[in-house]
Image 1 (spheres, rainbow, N blue to C red):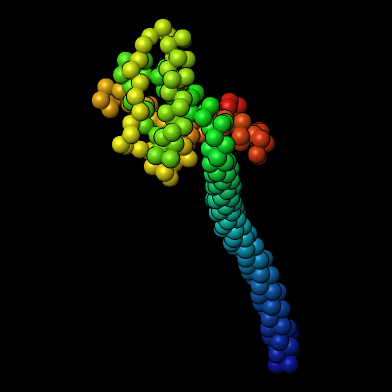
Image 2 (cartoon, rainbow, N blue to C red):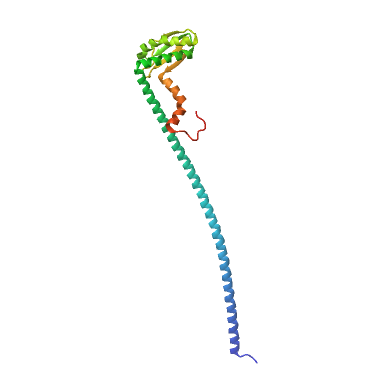
Amino acid sequence: MALSDADVQKQIKHMMNFIEQEATEKAEEIDAKAEEEFNIEKGRLVQEQRLKIMEYFEKKEKQVELQRRIQNSHMQNQARLRVLKAREEHIKNVLEESRHKLIEVTKDHAMYQKVLQKLVAQGLFQLLEKDVVVRCRQSDLKLVENVLADALKEYKDATGKDCNLSLDRENFISQDKSGGVELLASKGKMKCVNTLESRLEQISQQLLPAMRVALFGRNPNRKFDD
């Protein structure tokens, strides 16, 4: 039997609905797949950027840590230098105080005269010359004159050598010095400085390590003493 127009229209409509349903499902499938691929790509990009950001901040953190260590080392060195400077200044003050005490010694003429005798004798032992001139402060002229004979006798008794010992009455050690003597030989070419300051300097150099220990304690990092 031939289909009526109504049946044809019905079948056409059914076919159109079917095609539309297929198209809708296909579109949804495409959308779902696109969404999945989008999420995968987005996750990959996010992870990639996250790693880059982590790497960037890790590098920055290392730079900051390195800068902190450099700064810390610099501050420690500066602090160490300040401590060393303060210690040296303290030692300098101790030596200056000792120098002032030397001046007190010269005020005791009996004691100072004994010191002068030993200083002249020690100078003779160092020079071992036949002709020696002794120079002193102008204020010490009389005291030194009094000890020349005893100093010369001490020298002769110890060495068996004779010496023409004289006192310089024209040229003097500066009054700024604490005291002591200078001995000259070979027309001034040889000189032995035995002032109180020079002896203090010699002793302080020898005792400097012990002074540091006494004032500041032993340095745990020092293996050998100077």
